[in-house]
Length: 339
Image (cartoon, rainbow, N blue to C red; front, side):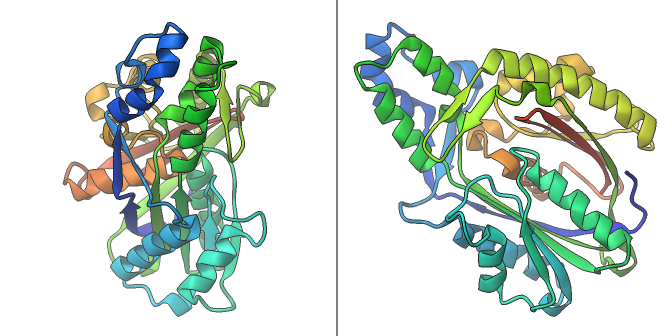
């Protein structure tokens, strides 16, 4: 799909304060690794993740999502009474009911006329939220929207480490749960506007997405565990990314390596990003990295990486930015921005 009237007014984030290194997790796992006859420091070596953030115990996900949203609204200068849609894209939830969107909407005291809903699609949720809100803006239904995401990994990582210490746990259990040890916590929010009302002109040009749901069980997660066939997931995800890239070239203007200055990709770890760059012939130097310091923060990864790259001055006004993600399911989405 293409957009003519959708702009990004602001992107803001809330970073988890407890910094936990991969070495610390490996120390917690040491006895289990020895019993399983595994290398002593596999996490940082295989993923390139040095550390990640966790929230303080007892922190609610909707609370940090609300804080990020409040920052984004303040930065945008948009009157909250004019916001017509709030979309929450978090994988993590505080409750099954009500929706996370309703909790954030209420905490922000947004107007009763502002629609609010959750959109869940693994690590692609935030891009899907932009697409959904963009279509409503494009159609003239609303003028402004807020997309929010909050992720909390501390509890599932702790639970996984405890489970791997159980005597019956095997080396195969370790590798099945390895992806869980890459997870981190963060919250991020974005304000979208009708382009004619935008104060900065950061445009959303369009997006494409493709699915390969024959591979819908390569990563299965609950609130307590995430079991992943990492090798098959990587192979199938990269294959789908190739097909999606070809579709993007057909549908999106200037979608080629000569025309794209920056790649903002979902961040899992060094092996995944290297495989994606090799498959799509992307220069790694054009990819902005957040996984070394934040790990895999799920659907928050793409907008967080975008915001940090903008804050650092690496992405400048007028440059073409490609947002790309692979989500378990399998789904791939690619989105074109003119910053």
